[in-house]
Length: 295
Image 1 (cartoon, rainbow, N blue to C red):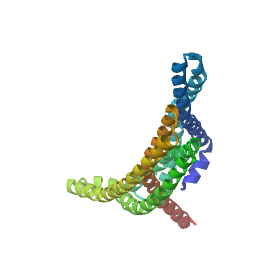
Image 2: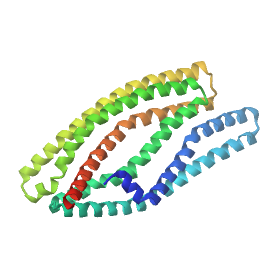
Image 3: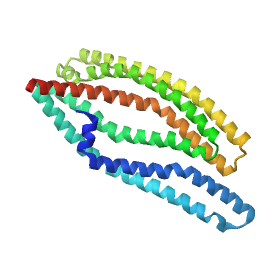
């Protein structure tokens, strides 16, 4: 079972879910620019006394906000129906494959629970990846309209961040394999009804989890140091060199803060991706082995 096969089987629902995410994020990415213009228009209106001068910026910002909020609310309701149906199909496929393979009930149940990661990835992580694309790529494009140097600064920092996260992913996937190996034994451990074995099982389960957490902490610390430098440099360009207006400064800071917080979220996405890759290989190897035995 591959992730791409699941997407193809449920392409209609998955396409709808992704489309709603894209519309929501498109409306969101232009909000800081529209609000910055509204802020400048309000300041000009207060100075000039012409209140009608900010009517259009206010309307545009409210429109973007309503689209972002409305689509976001609808998506959270529609997604649940799409992904519940998807998990039912996956669970049946995994159960049938395990039955044909001759696995015991405990291991089959464990495999079904592990397969939930497919749906969790599509439901949680695919939207996260799309949001990261807009948060990182979209903010760099938006910042280029204010000052190309600011956008290039973000780009130069983004490249080493991606390299660091790739190295992190390679380390974590080995730990994820160990963790999933242990989780497949959970039902068998409880079936023995021995409290000492249960304690030993969860203590051993904690070992790879602690190692994953330590790698995540190290990665997070390195990211924070890099991001502190970019934050200071961009603020210097925006405030001291460009002499931006109040509204423009707000927009730049809003986009910059989005870039920083999104970059911090990359390790968590990489960990989830590594986990799903390991589960996919595990289930696919079993399925292919089953087909070979049947042939």
